[in-house]
Amino acid sequence: MVSSHGMHELHVSLLAGVPNPGYLEVHSFPIDQYALQPFRFINGLAKPPEGIGHGVEFDWDKLQEYAVSTVRIA
Image 1 (cartoon, rainbow, N blue to C red):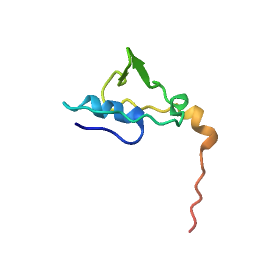
Image 2 (spheres, helix red, strand yellow):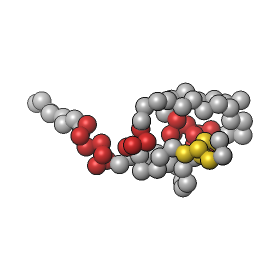
Image 3 (tube, one colour):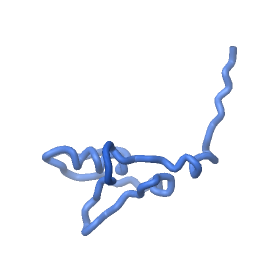
């Protein structure tokens, strides 16, 4: 059985891709407020996002306030 540890928005897709999924660890960090497709439960089951890939897409406009500018020192 495969279980996850980490970002549940990403790991739900990874567990959906294996034949022997186990437990999905869900963290309390509110990343859903910065994602275009929030994490979903349907009938008590975690559901991966629709589409190809892991499905985690950030809303960069909402994350802009946390942007860090970099300075290149010659």
